[in-house]
Image (cartoon, rainbow, N blue to C red; front, top):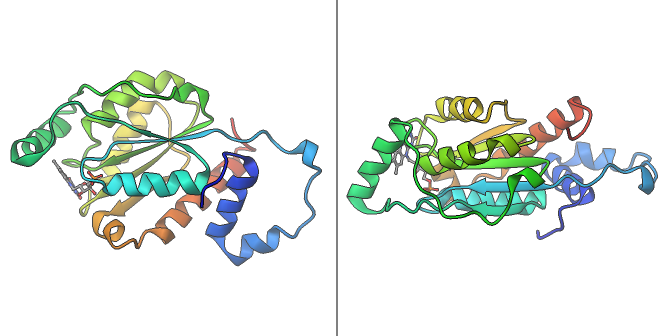
Length: 204
Ligand SMILES: Cc1cc2nc3c(=O)[nH]c(=O)nc-3n(C[C@H](O)[C@H](O)[C@H](O)COP(=O)(O)O)c2cc1C
């Protein structure tokens, strides 16, 4: 679904995620249109070496009506030597050089950060992006893709670097993404996001 970044679109996406229970709630009396909260602006910013995280980022952006920013690592990460250097740089928590980004994350209510897990860590590209932009992050949410494990350490590192806890976090396995079995994970993530926003009384 392609939709504009509006509150209505965000709610519709969440209702689609939650199924009948939220759909029933949609029939409840609605507040007058002029009392609606302003539309949240959401940015999905991600790095992907081989396309798995990109596929999830695109789906999330579509479901959230969010803007999309691909973070490009200018260091070669292809081939055997690229792979070796990638693991080494991630485990050493090294920064890298990223191409200039198109969007200013400070202009968004929520920045959703996505990374593959490398050596039980976030990628150097996401580390570099966070370090360059964290002062402008209003609120964050995280997602990662991984072969098997490392999400807990990766998310802890991202939260520490951002200086705040994520509103929600989602880890998907590469295999699930490849066979497109990630809708229920995304649904849970969107519901967790909505619950946290509701609990805090709206967008900060
Ligand atoms: C250098 C390197 C290190 C990796 N380390 C881990 C790891 O610690 N744990 C894990 O489950 N998967 C690991 N993986 C697998 C990736 O996280 C996984 O394939 C991911 O979905 C790739 O995302 P992408 O296609 O967006 O680049 C590693 C991959 C690479 C290239």
